[in-house]
Image (cartoon, rainbow, N blue to C red; front, side, top):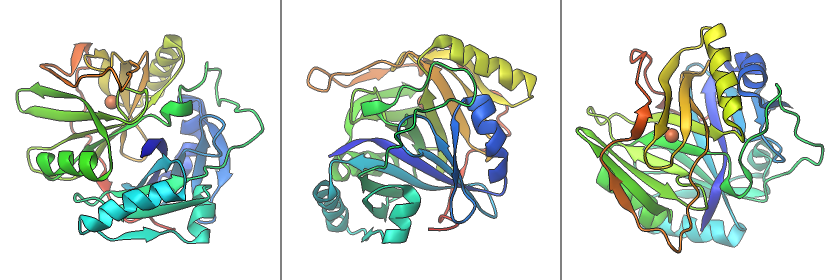
Length: 300
Ligand SMILES: [Fe+2]
């Protein structure tokens, strides 16, 4: 079983901008550089959770999930292989770069690279936020959530549920918008999927959650002061109750910065359907800023 979203990797020619954007706007801590020059970002006790690799263009490289141990990773990898998709055990250099004991990786039917990792390294020295914030809500709920635009929504829904083991939280159907949300721990969703009208595959956003609404407000002020595009205005989601806004990062993907996400109890939860993604706010703007494409990682 997948336990949580562990880490995320992106390729970008603007990777070095994260050395200021990360700590100063998001409040994350710089966690050194990778062998390829990648900027590692820390949000909690984990050694790092977000990595921006140098690359010729902005692209999503990999989505890292944590599982109990190697046997758990192998079990999921086995289902992936039975589904007709190749799964590979990472070598020692790749694991050292991710700061995990080991992982299996594969590409899902839309082409996203998923990594099933175990033994994520933790740093004993206390997390030091890049600016004064209350901290990130992570722990058993992991890094946050990712939202993907897949080629075929029904195929994606089957794959993420039946092969990867995600549990449905709910569905939003609002005119042409249809999105499925999935949980694997107490976080309302660690993964959500949608399909774009042109069926193009894209990484739609990463969500990180802070422990205080004021932290969201301060981030909002910083985006306005620095002319960082706010691609979705402040609002509250209907399904996970998150109060958030979305900013455009230096590497061409949207980052939802939120507070107050709903906690779900899997044993009691019954999937539902909503007619709107948000109860207030969340107006889309800067629609010219397109979503992130997927790509091979620049370096392994
Ligand atoms: Fe979100």
